[in-house]
Length: 458
Image 1: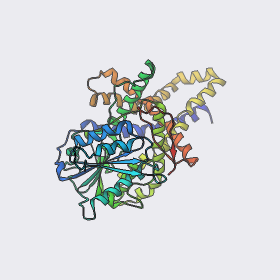
Image 2 (image 1 turned 180 degrees about the horizontal axis):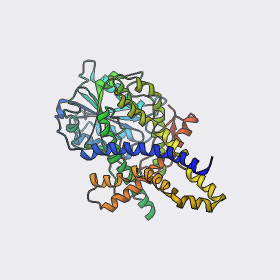
Image 3 (image 1 turned 90 degrees about the vertical axis):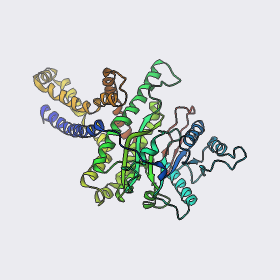
């Protein structure tokens, strides 16, 4: 097989994958750019319970609890201490009271777990709070009114989140079992406190890319899923109706054993017939990671969790509650890490082959390249970069309008580089799966200075 034919075949395959992705991006951008805020609802018609899973969260938990109790005084806060080795539980206990001779804060609850049953994953921790809540409510509680809100230990739901989620198109609709709100990075534009000039610039750029990813690309994907009926859940800012959780209980609770427990929860809700919603009219703030090492650890866990959820392919495809388009969209999402693995093998092939050929006969390669073959490579590169470059200007327009257009373009190029880290994490996730390492690893926060990270087996 000659060079031109082999290069043509590999480029055709790569371009087919790229064109499919470009088409997908164009379809999801339109609903995102056209979105207008929708009417809100009356949160007093529902009962709200915040679940805050914690493992060694002493530096942040006090501020989070105070924020939640102050901002949402009628809501209950359930802190799940997953056998922390620091003072997390003591901090929560002190906040519970009793205060001023009273009986303490009856809206603040502490659920404590102990090893060997503890530290087995976020899903298990949430299940323990689910069981505690069910016991506290009793058998005759109105589970359709009760809404569970999963918030990270450093999470800050916006003050309007309850009224937005109570809207008629969200929990005002009895068919809606879960709602995911927009996620923003609270430390965007804030450099890390430690490190030199380059380290601070790098950390700030990484945080900005995480904010861009969640507030533009992921938000657009979620809004487009409203048309396919396949909106998925996230790990932070996840709102779920208690009756919906009751309907999918299996074993210890509604959350299962995948490392991507939020997406897994959405699969079970959707295939059980519940509707899910997403809104950018409110949000939850969380702290993005400055460290590339911690970022790769986090994304490896997410990638491995997506691979684990491939076991639900048959369940999704056979579900009578999902349309053909909806099932196809969910399967496309599950295929992403596998397509990234394939992409790392296919995309470099034309350049490798060209390099070998150029070493053998550089004159012939130059004549072939200058004779028009360069157009193939230009097209090849454009289709590979364009789906990522466009998110920079889109993010600037929708989220950071005070920034210049050139800054938006720079964000786009940064995001294109940022996305390539997922090729690394997909391979890391695959290697972990091959080795049978399915443990849950806590990603250290920016405020944590110790260097030990413990991987735990499910």
